[in-house]
View 1: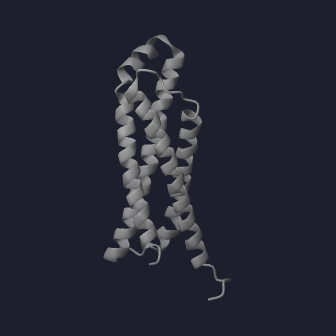
View 2: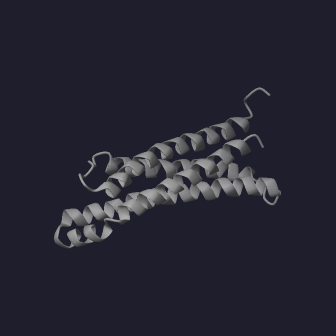
View 3: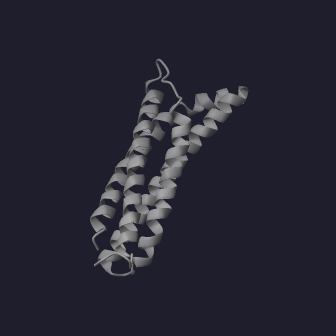
Length: 160
């Protein structure tokens, strides 16, 4: 079970990323009421509000999936209640796709956002979203590496 420390590390980073995501969502929600009022009068404001919500939701979903997957792998192996070999093959690529999609979705939305003067909480939300993108990138690398290690460890053509 050489991969347990990697998966445990993914769980820890996922938990840290979930905390950052919670802070970002909390900071951005402070301005939700104003945004909703603006959305009543502006289609652009409505679209921005919807996209802000979906980018935060995609990050939260990918983070939750990774956290649940890593905890399930570690616990099932530690408790011996489930043979993890089938999950080893499925979870890394599934999580890589989820994290990658959330990263791209967030990158496309937040990269062009400028900070707004005198709106500290919103600017902190933008900063936390940037940190979350960086953490998502790292999680993607970790899940990808885990998938490659799993694939190599099961190749019959490699010398023993």
